[in-house]
Length: 211
Image (cartoon, rainbow, N blue to C red; front, side, top):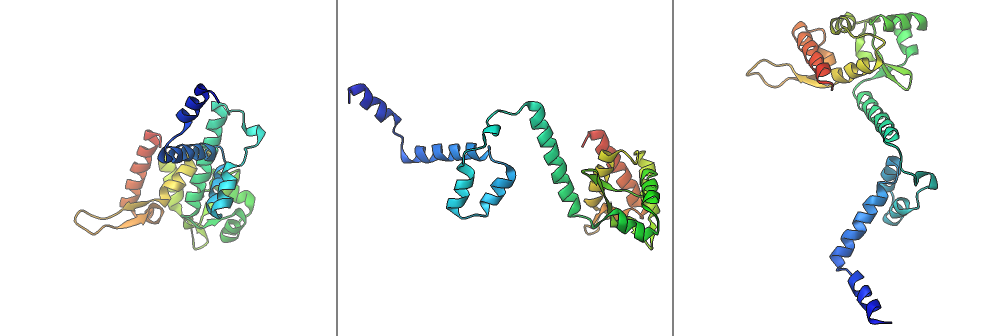
């Protein structure tokens, strides 16, 4: 072995801390190439099995970098999935058959009510989910139609209706100055005229801010 070879070998040697840091960086880089579901599943495995899942060779089809457009589409799809999961945890969702049974109408009649803004539904992957808060005594609560009309939202504008349903699931403090905090989901306050005006104002502001 010549002197040059020895010098190259010595320059490649790192301290233990540097080596650990380098390995962590490589592991994170590899983890970023693995799908989200695989990362979550790996976290539930024993150490050796978890590491095997992360450091396995990615499929050849994944070696080619995705275009910005494709990455944006994937990100948007993930955002929609996350939004749906968040909303689903806030409501008891009914399917069309359940709503028809509650209201005593056909699916065609339910479709007309939905298109007329008398009933609202969260649309996910073309399937509609009806929050149960809007039904009382086998009728659709009139506050929903009142809100849709006041907001001037087209009932078939699925992104805005979805946004509204998510907005109504979040809490607001409906208390007077000096009173204890009174946090309640917005949908529970729709029949209170004062709260209705606040909800109307806040959602319009949300739309104007593009959130």
